[in-house]
Image (cartoon, rainbow over all chains, first blue to last red; front, top):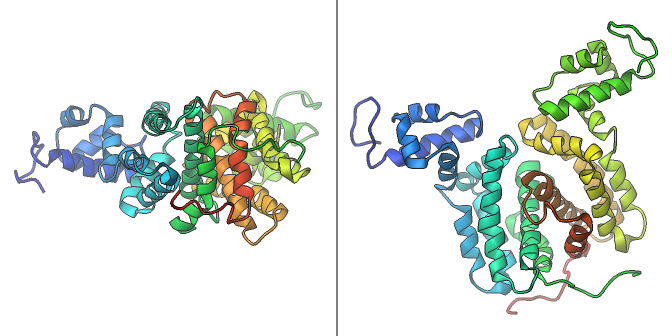
Length: 205
Length: 205
């Protein structure tokens, strides 16, 4: 793919970054996050190892870039958060399901999910991303004193849907069409965004 | 602990099963599911390897038994499903949080969660357990044609709480006291158990 032609480690060129990302995505998908080395990716992309650090800083940075090269969940969420607040739950859920259900954009996300528990530093990276890109951004759009708590409740439900459908593959959630899943979960998602107390006390009912 | 005294591989006795479970729990907690061998556990428990198969059938069986030796989530769920249906969501969530928050009963469950994605056969075991012990039992207690779907929605939310609090450790869910977590999630959990359509259409609101 590189216009330079010939063999040997290339010093970097217009396609080098994309080539590294392709190799990285292929390796991470095949072998998971932990067992892949920067050296393997560099060799496979036919570039100098130092270029990986130059472009992506670290293995974590490279993984993030590889995962989000085809679709960035943070951008999808940011887009879904804009627009009519009344339709926010279905918009967020529908857009995330499109991203995860698609073979191309979903595969690296599923790999990321499956590798979450293998590396504490990696889990930290995902945690920070979720707290910053999803919980904090959503809390900004909610009013009331417990905005952050409600945003966290919303994200917890989204996490449940993702884990149940793509990691545990529990039925009937795993094979349900996306639009049915949206209908099933939107009432509870909308409920979690309401300020407390959300309804009359039910004690003794 | 064994009344037989002396060293050497014991052929089995009144405490042998418990001794194997203690060793298994210790090894699984320290090293995770996949990297522990039956041979290591047998050596550590000072019993013949064949006894492990005799008592527990397989490594998966031994792991299940070791995890549930101090507290069995399926039994906790079965108890919580009984009683006043109006209080079912808070009962299930509160009892599960007690189980997971407790250092003794929670540690093996967290190990199980962290190892979920490492072994497809192991994930199958957990999936079957959840489908059988939680979704099917809960669906039996709900009326209406979509009982199983609503039970799955409920379990998906429970899965979200467990993953967010104990695997991702997303704040503020990770460090919230259990009773606050129950208040935060019970409205949405209760909502997920209502037959659809659950509320007037909100389109255009």
